[in-house]
Image (cartoon, rainbow, N blue to C red; front, top):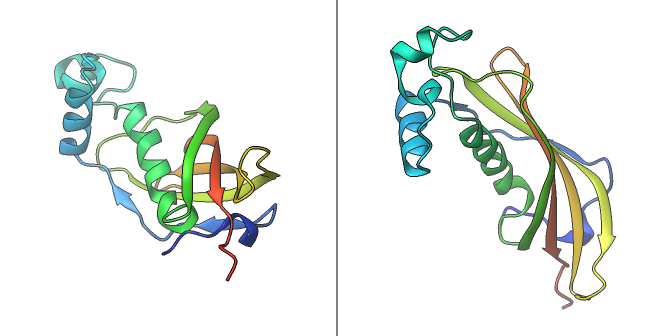
Length: 151
């Protein structure tokens, strides 16, 4: 199990996630069509060429999902009870096909669960950056995480 238990985290803990991902045309096309998003900026090269971006813009919800996915192995894999919510989601820079993305996570808050004595709530701050180290997406995630089982 790669994830950590609630009691193994401290406020300020930061992880640079090792996995990097180059976004492909197939990623964008499949995600966009699977989620029934008809936005021409994501699907129509000619329409995208006429936009201020001049090219296909990667679906922002793909970027968000990838950022969270890149974090799971180091944060909550095997210890997550449930994601409770996402907050302060921003996308300050566009993502294009061929961009290589990487992510980091830090612990903003730790809170004991009132209803589950065997778990606690961690607020992670996630950031996704492109190959130029520009932030393309960030958010806070509240996650209910198991405490280390007593032996």
